[in-house]
Image 1 (cartoon, one colour):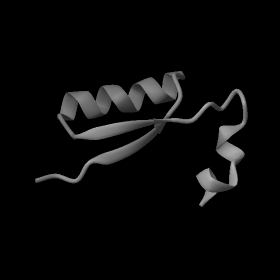
Image 2 (tube, rainbow, N blue to C red):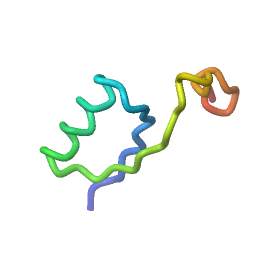
Image 3 (spheres, rainbow, N blue to C red):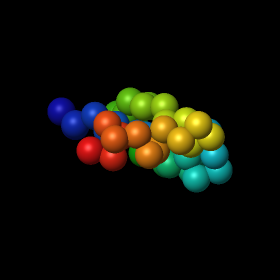
Image 4 (cartoon, rainbow, N blue to C red):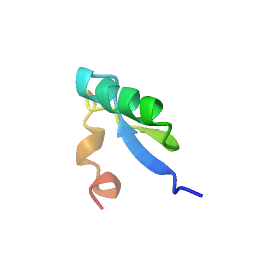
Length: 48
């Protein structure tokens, strides 16, 4: 069984590209929202 991919995602053109790829290749993934508008990408827990 394939491992599930954690996709750290925000709805931007680059985020859409990878979700399209994952859907087309039928790879299992889980979306983890990262609100780049509010700076979630700088949160110490995210940076770990």
